[in-house]
Length: 249
Length: 322
Image (cartoon, rainbow over the protein chains, first blue to last red):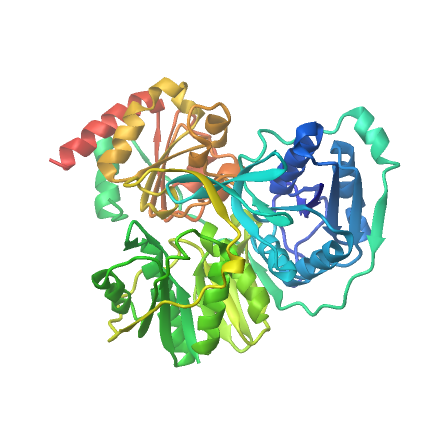
């Protein structure tokens, strides 16, 4: 079986976000680009499954929709251990556009398990994985915090209200992955970095797809009022403020 | 034309978010001069159903089917898309939680409807249809234009106040044919606690960090939560160390929550943690380091050792609850 891991290229999560002139896009000067954290965890789990011969997973491919500038992030995924990569050569204008591109690739190349992070840390959209599954008319499982295979059958742990459940769906399916899927993201070793240089990255030209949404403006969050400090010996005063000023208890 | 809302229930009752969704949908319906239809799937009794009318739903479609007892995003989407077409929905409102995130994108593809995900305000304008959403994990907000005829909006939890707007709601109970070929999810095992306050649905959350020093010190935090009717949460290092279950982890890669009150105990407030809690209405920080970044996000702060402050706080709450 083959796994496809969808990868988003995002600013490092500690980046101070600034906007470009006109506030319609972010100022990318000095930004360190990384694999979206949930995608990195998906990739880690995919590689763990491949390492386990009993899982039946034979290969792990990563896919990214983005311009050539994203190549270092793709090479990083290869250095971590993905076998090969596909890049759809287009700016990722919106979730609909990205999902349509990835679904088109999957139709041609046939994957058994498609893994997507629950959201990207830039747009916080949480929709690409679900869209891919509907474009392909295949099952999807959301809020996934575990995947394993037993006798070729996927056993997927998903979070539900007040707990979790283990479900199974037939392949091919889309797993929309959250925290818990892997303990720590796998880090590229020197050997992996050397090998990544010669691994194949297939570049595909995009389908013509009209985006359905467009960001027209960014704004900063409203600043918070300064913190009121309360004496550690007098917690009753805190409760008084919460009751009478904030009115939240 | 109508505004369609997908509500959610839990143990036979609507989740609070369902009333937020209906309040929000009613706000949009007023802007569009149209009516609100709310959809409920699963067993909810009539007294509970009619409560949706309190917040402005004009029509309640109560879907009862023994084939829809397991959440399957394909089957649910198929039912919702039929209802959306029948009701001539121009805007569909869904929660931005796990279930909503599973349904909204599928519905988007079915209806060729653009998704405004995680919106936290009524649309900024109708023409062009522009919504306001959180991006960069709370470090920026975006104005997003949705260009399709049908718009799907997923509402960030606890971002919109409940607004009573009584409507004479009609209840339409239906048992639709379910395409069983879509039901591909089989349940192998379920671990579920009833009666527990859901972290993502809680008004108050008490959360512990590394300042709690050991997994054995959690009793006063849990007691405080129980006295306040709050859910418990934790920071990433705490769940990584296995002191608390990872379901409690709030932060960028954990749960993103927006309670009315978030009490951070012994949490320094790294950017990644703040990304998960910054939409809380009020934040209280208890931390021994007065320079900890959590105090920049908090409205109320106590500088002190979490393990010394907590028992005093518990006593003080008991005092006012007498």
